[in-house]
Image (cartoon, rainbow, N blue to C red; front, top):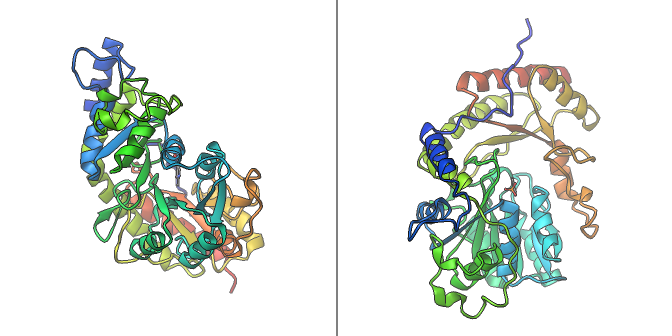
Length: 398
Ligand SMILES: *Cc1c(COP(=O)(O)O)cnc(C)c1O
C-alpha cells in the first residue's frame, strides 16, 4: 500500500499558555500601543527589545512590523539613498529586493553557489565593478556562508553589511550568532520563522547613530527614551528633526507573544535540527537527490530543508513535485519561472534592472524546498523521507 502523509505543512505549534494568559491580561488593559504605558512601566515592546538584545548579544534592538520593514529602515539608517547600488543575493525572498527598492536603491544581484551561499568571487567582482558599498547579506533558508572570508572581503573593500537573518535566528558561525557580523541585522517574527507572532521584525546593531536613526524612522514620535534597548538620548539630538517618521512600530500584543517564546528558542532550534538531521540523512541516501553538506563551522537551524534533484530531468520536475503533493508532501521548486506563493526567481522581479546569473539559475533549477514545522515529529520526518524516496524511484533516470 502506498504511504501517504496527512499532516498539514502550515500548522504551527500553539502559543505557550503563559503567552496566551499574558496577552489576555494585556487585552483587558486595552493598552496595545507600545507608548501607551502607565508611569515608568516598560511596555512589552520595550521589554522585548531589552530581552532580545541581551539574548542576541547586541547593544541595541528595535522591534517593528516586519523583517522587510527592518531591512528598509536599516538601509536608510546606514545612509543608503535613492539611486545607490546595493549588493544582495540572487537567491533570496522577495522582501529583500523590495526593501532595497523601498529606499529607491538598485539591487545588484550576486551569484549563489551550489551550497546556497553567496559566491564570494562574484561578490568581489560585483562590488568592484559597481562600486556599491552596502551588502544586504541574506541567509536565505538559513544557509550561512564562510563568514570569516566574507567579512574579510567586505572589510577590505569598505562594504557595510546588513544581515537578513529571517531564517537564522539562533544560528551561528564559529560560535558567533548570525546577526552579530554586520553593522546591522534584521530578524523576522513572521509565522514561518523561529518566533511566531504572525508578523513582526527586530533590528539589532551596536552602532548608536544608525540605531537612533532607525528608531526615529520606525515612528517613535519623540518617545525614543521609552525604548528598551536604545542609545542614550544625546544620540538623537542631531537627527530628531531630520529623520522622517515611517510608522512601523511593533504593538504590545505581538511583543507579548514573542516574549513568551524567547525562553524556548534555544530548545526549539534543537528540535528543528533533530528533524532536519533525520531528513538530511535519509534524503542523502536517495539515488538522484543531492544535499549540499553543511560546513562544520555552521550551527544551522533546520526549519526547512533544500535538496537538489540531480537525477531528475528538468522537464519532469513539475510532475515530480505534483506526484509528491499527491502523497501529501508539499515541495516548492525554486526553478519555477513563474513566481508561486512564497517563492520567486530573481528574474521575476521586473522592477530590478535585468541581470543574468547563470550559476544561480542552474542551482535554483535543481532545487526543491520543504518546510519542517515543529508540529511534525521524527516519525513524520521518516515518513516524508520514505515517500520522497519512493516517488523519486519513479522519476530518476537510470
Ligand atoms: C521571511 C523572510 C524575509 C521577510 O520577513 P518578513 O518579516 O515577512 O518581512 C526576508 N528574508 C528572508 C530570507 C525571509 O525568509
